[in-house]
Image (cartoon, rainbow over all chains, first blue to last red; front, side, top):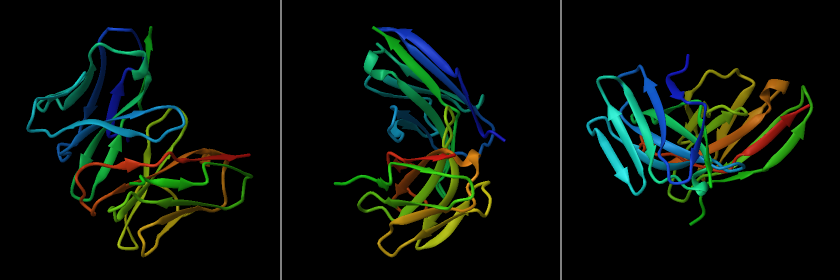
Length: 112
Length: 114
C-alpha cells in the first residue's frame, strides 16, 4: 500500500516558469514532510521540509504549501531553471522511529 | 566532513548468488537505514539499524539481512538473488533513533542481477 501518493509522474516546464508537484497522504500520525531532490547517479538530497503545524515554508525559490485538513502538500519551484531538472520525491515521516515513506517521484525537465 | 559513503558503486551478479553492500554513515550519525530504489520508483524502506540491532524492518523477505558494526558502519546482504532485486540500494544515516526527521543519503550501490 502506497502511503504517499505523488503527482504528476513527469513535468516539463519552460525556464522561468513555476513547477508544481503534489503529494497526498492518509496516515495522520505523520509529523514531518520533506522533499528530496535526486540527480541521475546520485542519492536523494534534502531540499526543504515542513511540519504539519505550518501552512507554508519558503526557502529561496522553493516553497512547500501544506493543507493539513486535506492531507495534501505541494512543492512549488519559482523561476524554474534548467539546473532544477531532476527527480523530486515527497516523503512523510513519523519522527519517533524515523520511519520514512516516499512518494513515487516526479521527473522534472526545465527547458531553456 | 565526509557524508554517507557506499561501496561498491556498481556490481553485476547472477541469479542465486549472494551480495554484500557496505555503508559508512555521516560523521556523528549512529543510525543507518537501507532503501531499495527500483528504476523510476521512490526509495522503499528495507530496514534500520541502531546500536548494532535491527530496529525496524520494511516489507522485504528474509533474504535481505544486515549488520551494524561498533563504528556505526553497516552492511546489507542479499541471498539467493532474483532478477527483481536489480535496483539502486541506498544507505541513509541520521543522528539517533528518532532523529531530526532528516535522512542523509549516500550515492547508492547499483546492483544488476542477470
